[in-house]
Length: 316
Image 1: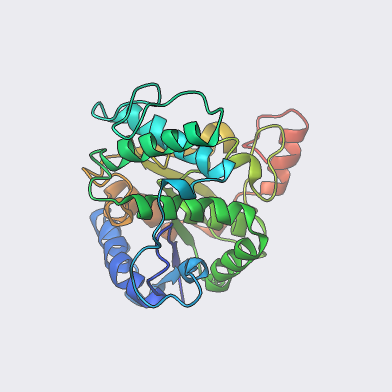
Image 2: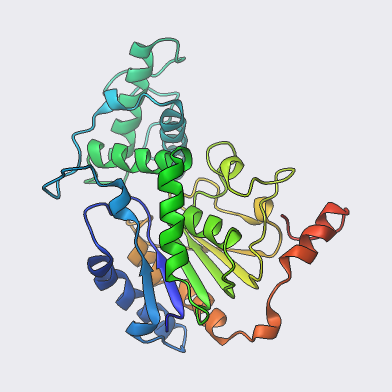
């Protein structure tokens, strides 16, 4: 039965569970081997796939939808794009910041659609020129942006994605490994299911983005602190220092001190899932979950009560 479940991120709408598994399962197993095992068998690693929920109806090819700057009209999409741009400028000296001019137009206060469009174009120009997004087209970047926002605003997509993850969990599942948007889907699923897993490993996660992601989680955070999934013993959050999606790289400030934040180096592919999976730090976190004893399980309900009473709990 499945001991480890991997939950993917954005941009997988033209793949399938099987094609994704061919990429991520060997890399996940390789990471645990680097961490001196135990190495789960291929049959013990499952992929929770929800990418098809974002595939346009009637789509006949693997080409990205023809998005351009004019398609970033939603306030949430705009705010997320600006956050990514600001983070890219912080970690890449070659990326001009939001206060600088871009080759597609100057950026100023967003007072009209025309000015806002220039801001979007400048952000896309900067991001697609960043060393870790070289070769990423505008339409792919905008598509990823829209998927992130759509999950948080479309109740049907949200429910169906969470159901896909829940369906992959079994009584034998010990570890959930979740990348990018998948970390949001996995977290919400673990907070709203009767299944109990030992360890959560989040990779390149946007969970720490307060207004855009964290404050919209289900269940809703209380006084700025997110709930700790019932029964979870350990949570390791792993981020590359240059990962633009993991704008807030440390999650212990929003989910409690029990979160272990770890920084890795993924080379030029900072947000790539397979780079995260082959990191020994990721393998170590997975191995620890596979080796953990059931008696170590964390009582989240008791911790929440301690927190509400003014104790030093890990969060709600």
